[in-house]
Length: 500
Image 1 (cartoon, rainbow, N blue to C red):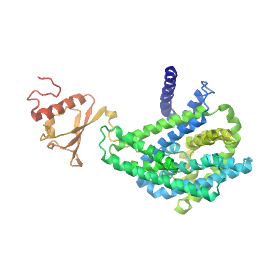
Image 2 (cartoon, one colour):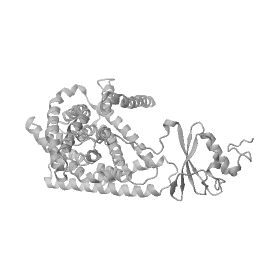
Image 3 (cartoon, rainbow, N blue to C red):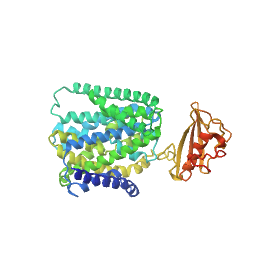
């Protein structure tokens, strides 16, 4: 038993490290890293190393877990000031646009390939959701108007919710048992309640994290991500949309004034990368390359219908009331990226044993590979051709609270408690070594940059940047002054217990 675990850990860690290295490799070659992850899964699967994996139920479960993390990261990093102007348009794209896309793709497959209506609509539903991971990873590298990027990101974060509900509905034997208006009311209920649950959990989490004095900074990112998972679970328990709850809770928490906010965002970003890697490798492992030839025709027909009919028509119908320019509509039509989400959705009918589900999964896999190769490589030229670029807009802004790695420094925090001899000491009397500097003084809730004559008081908090070479010496000096005051050296106090 332990031997199997050791082997699994060996293979898993090796795949993870290769996948991390592949990000840099794929960036240099201009290839989407998501395809590299899929290729890794195929390489260790039955066509490569011979590992056979065909558990669609487990893949669906793990895929949903990965999507929760990916959507949560998208919500946490979404800025409300940017999201608010496009919220109505994004919501319309994620609901009405999805419905139009499903009907168009379903009609083409029903007429062109003779698929029955239920399976044809299932194809349309699986393919109608844009992929949050693909959109977040691709669009943030392009110089596009922030409003356009926000619209696509918000759509990808919101459209998973209705699509999952529709795919589950179309995959079950109870489909058609109720009239269409009943199903529409059920869908509205689940989406509305999911948004309400997400808002409630987000507000409660904002209140709790803002007032909780957790003993370690690393607990705040864990708590924040845990709250988004709680939103999903709470919504699912009351039969509401868990994915919409995750996104709404993430947006609320991401725009709140939380302690250690940058650490929360960094932690969520790392988890999202891990979820993407694991998800794509797992999906590559599940696919059987020997079956892909038979799926080529339905994949091509569905892809052509989606790109040239369904997506443009859904964008036109959904954005008509919002005064979006024609050029931007054309770009929105082309930038509806598909990634892991359609493949995960295809595991729902596969695990439910729906007729034609195996061929559907293979067709979606082929289609996603083709779409990822073609669309991500042509987004920049298409944006330039349509003149929707924003040259003055930075491709990506990375803000860190302490970008000290390049100078090999650490950020130290010093609190001055009652009884400390640091109180009353002027800043220049600390006599910190060269390479250490006090960068911020927090006093009575107000931050300021202290000067040499600043006198320290009980309750003050100091942020000190110290290079790795002088960190220990800095800490010893602060301890010494804290015990004996400004004349610490006069009393032979060096903060490490030694005497002169």
